Length: 140
Image (cartoon, rainbow, N blue to C red):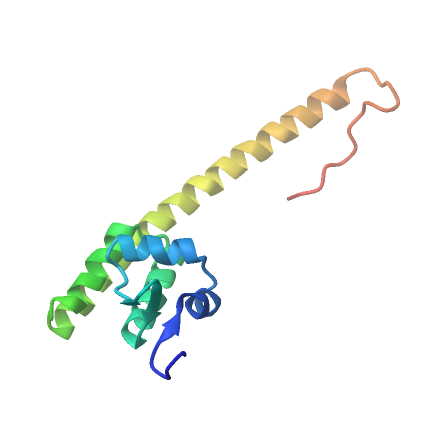
C-alpha cells in the first residue's frame, strides 16, 4: 500500500492477477471507484473487497451484469438479508446453468467416443497397409 491505506494500480494487478487494462475496464464499468490523484489511481479497502468479489464472480462464470447487481446491493444500503438472498438466488441460477452445461458436455463426450470407436472399427476392417491400421486408442 502506498500510504498504508491504498494500493496502486500495479499493486492491485499483482494482488488479483489481472492487467491494468482490466482494472481500468472495471472502473469504466463503474464496478470499482479508485481515488484519482493526477494520473494515479489509488484503490482503498472497499475497492479491494469489490475486486475480490468480481474475480470470484468471474471465476464462477457470472456475467458482469450479475456482478454489478450484487455489488449494487452493497452500495445501495440494502439490508444484509436482502443481499444474501439475492446472492443466493444468482448463485443457484449459475449452479443450475453449470450443471446443465456439464450434462451437455458429458453427452457430447460420450457421442464423440462412440464416433471414435466406430471410426476405429471401420479402419481396422480395412485391408492392412502396415502403417495405416489403428491400434488400441486409449480412453481420454
